[in-house]
Amino acid sequence: MSHKQFNVKNKNDGSSGRLIFSAVINLLITVAEVAGGLLSNSLALLSDALHNLSDTVAIFIAYIACQVSKKASSQKRTFGFKRIEILAALFNSIVLIVISVFLFIEAYHRFKNPSPVKGEILLIVAITGLAGNLISAFILKNSSKKNLNIRAAYLHLVSDTMSSVAVIIGGTLMYYYGLYWIDPLISVIIGLYIIRETYSILNETINILMQFTPSNLDLELIKLKIEELPEVNNIHHLHAWNLNDREIHFDFHLNLDNNLTIDEATVIRRKIIEILNEQFGIYHITIQFEYNCCKNREMIFATKDK
Image (cartoon, one colour):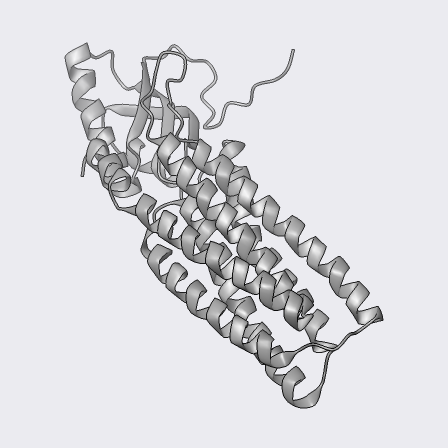
């Protein structure tokens, strides 16, 4: 598969339509849960509604990011807008954490002053919300495997599905046994679950924005594979980073064993590109050819501030 084919596949997988459909479903769930939470006096249901509202916003942001990321590159923006999806994923992750903190604060007040909850209303609305979240999560499941931005929105839906299940269980206990302290407890559990699920996305988005080496790349192994070529003396000054969650960029200096012609070096370049394409999934490659001209040949060149 060529790099061009790789990009086209990601742009035309129908993700945008799925995102809009999921956003509409979640907006309807939010309205139903706000009404149900107010009528039933349930913090858990209002927490779930707030979470669903964040889902709707997250999915809408993910949709906008998908559309903007397709804009063509220009002289002023040579990489285009591809990294906007990473910014959207970061924003959504931060919003989820803020919501969790809000749930903890509200739950604390409810623990101090528990109040009766109308369990039958809570159950009806929570079951409806669960059905909607399951549908939305199913719609985005496949797309979430290919795109970090969509995965952030998908995790919003998965976490809300889990919270709906918790609300239903709590509503059942409150309806039959009057255990109203379960209502704020469920809010705390929802908040803890959100933070747990958000951490991996937050960590990955920060790694990409900081241009850290992709976690799935072994630079030592790449160096070993390329230096197995008989014409290569060594490679050094390696740099590897993600433009977004799909595109890896890789550049390095290559010291040749002999002073070759450009045609001969081009043959070696093709061999190296084939290795990086097929064995490591790297398609954006920049090679600086050298012949005994670079004094510092460390794998990673550490620059120092003057």
